[in-house]
Image 1: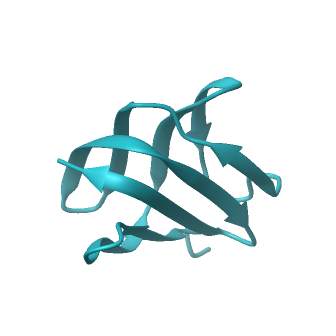
Image 2 (image 1 turned 180 degrees about the vertical axis):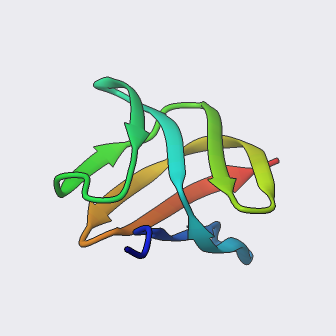
Amino acid sequence: MATEKLHVELVSPEKRVWSGEATMVSARTLEGDLGILPGHTPLLGVLVDGSVSIKSESGVEEFSVHGGFLSVAKNRVSILTETVD
């Protein structure tokens, strides 16, 4: 049985920061901290300043984001941020 993955895109106005397959995404929204796994229910969240963590087969990538939005639907995670460090 194949393991489901998330297709993740992290973008800022300047560039695509990260794109690829992941097993988990963590982010902080106005509603609180989120942990997103394959099969997560659809949602749209407003990001607050904080960390976004993307776990893939090659390891864990940490990004510091400042504002933006997060969208989850059909194992696709789109993270649109104003700035990223």
